Image (cartoon, rainbow, N blue to C red; front, side):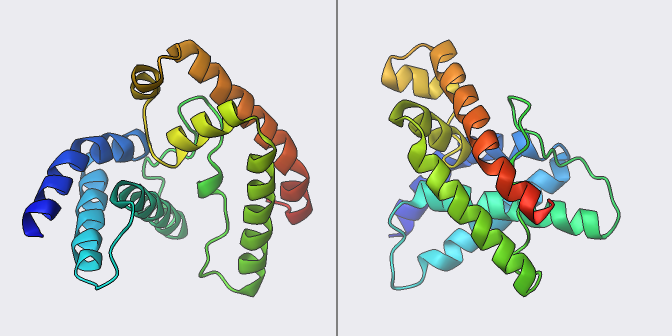
Length: 180
């Protein structure tokens, strides 16, 4: 069991580091987040319930830690470099969602936004949705997806761009309604 854990950490560490560094420009902050993620993973690994998809779990925790760091920096009035804009120039939804700990109004807004996002994602063509989810949630690179699928990298980039434009348009009314 410990050897499985070690192998997983060794396999996922470089990819997770790149994922974090693309979003957190300060190296010390990125290292802290990476350590926090693996600490949380080791703690969760001890529980009787197994983690079904360890890689996805690691990226989800990393994304949450990045968001937490970004929000904490905002509350402290710091402008530490955590980039709320994604690789393709789109604003990242995860950094504008209200914090789940910010009270009932924020919880309602978050729930409303996530429900709208879920419906919008379901309305995307499969090819666009799969590229969007692989890049945004799993942290997979376009180069990696192109190598695995045989689809040209420019095609994957275009699919992601169309997905972002579609999602932005579909979610605009919800953002306007909530005044975010």
